[in-house]
Length: 261
Image 1 (cartoon, rainbow, N blue to C red):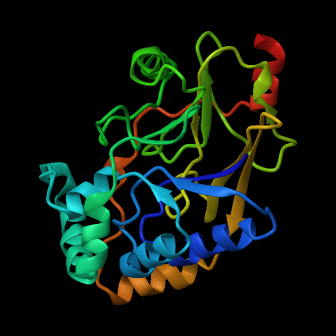
Image 2: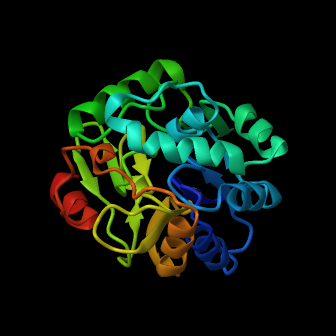
């Protein structure tokens, strides 16, 4: 089975369209999204409608929950709360109902488990080797048949496996053969709509479970158009305090696998 893995769309229609158009050449893929469909961006309704029309299997993210009123904004996120209120008004009743129906944890197959932050907690950052190890250890109980755990939230494209560390995925490389990994492994595809690496590139991952192959992609999109729409809507710039303090070292996954397996 072919899997296209997305996360953190953040109401960025240009980025989401670029990813879905790019997937057109990869026939037969099932598409899954690890949450944060809305928040920050100017096109929540269009993104929700597009994901629904493409039958993308989604989980709810922390921004989705905040828009739904399930999570109260903290003092540090007061600026972002303006955007959540705007998003709530911009979404149709149908789209709000759809967001509210999304699960915290999704099992698209017996071997895959998907959530946004961590098990049943959309606000937890898995941004270190220790956090990844704890999450994978919980998988033994929470999803004993799962070989792949997918999460989002950090906006950092990364992979992790017990005993092998926590390192970034580099787009444009030849890919990673996951058959060499022992046990359950963790994948974060990065952010479709709000990259936090100083680029304007939409990130997503392709995973072929028959071949055991993971490939990471970074696609250009019309980011100035997105920015102009955000300004016209009166939306604030995304707050920097939501970026996790600790980020993984910039080491290629291929090198990591070479030295640790």
